[in-house]
Amino acid sequence: MNIILLGPPGCGKGTQAKKISERYGLAHVSAGDLLRKAVAEKTGLGLKAKEYMDKGKLAPDELVIGLMKEKLSDNVLLDGFPRNLNQAAMLKNFFDVNAVLNIDVDFRILVKRLTGRRSCSCGTVYHVEYNPPEKENVCNKCGSRLYQRDDDRKEVVVKRLETYKKETAPLIEYYRENNKLKIVDGNGSIDETFRKICEILNNI
Ligand code: AMP
Image (cartoon, rainbow, N blue to C red; front, side, top):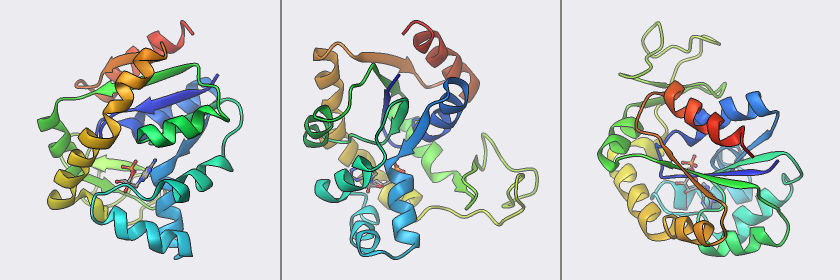
């Protein structure tokens, strides 16, 4: 089973992707995580991508597609890819998708979720209000200090949401026309959203 997770920044793609991949035994392939790894390792690709990420823009297609191609096999959950129509058209050539889940969240909620998000280098994600760590700014799992992603700052968040509307939202129609689209209401809690996703995936 191959699944694509669509939705605006802050809709909970990363959080749900971790839960889905565990429950259904899928490999979680996150474009954003792969790019952040390249940035942290200061590879040529990473340095180039960072220029775009810091501005809330999409990294160039050829760069992201190259990175993703290596990771695609069967039983994959794609998170954050494709992010525009060109990437979707490319993906179609080498990846059969069973369902595309679009996690739908109110725009005002997205800004709050993104600016309050705190991340840990071990991959665990918190929110200052909705899902705080036991000790302020310290990861429950590994004890490392939490940080705010550069692109979770308010000015970049606004830009990322604009980029989403312009470039990524058209994918909703694209996959609807391909009869792959499933809409999930992601305004509720993490567990509520996950339950809705499982109802869909259990019927595929
Ligand atoms: P994310 O972690 O999914 O929110 O992605 C963080 C940032 O990485 C985005 O704002 C983009 O700058 C970049 N990025 C992630 N996925 C893609 C993609 N499929 N195409 C281009 N840029 C991407």
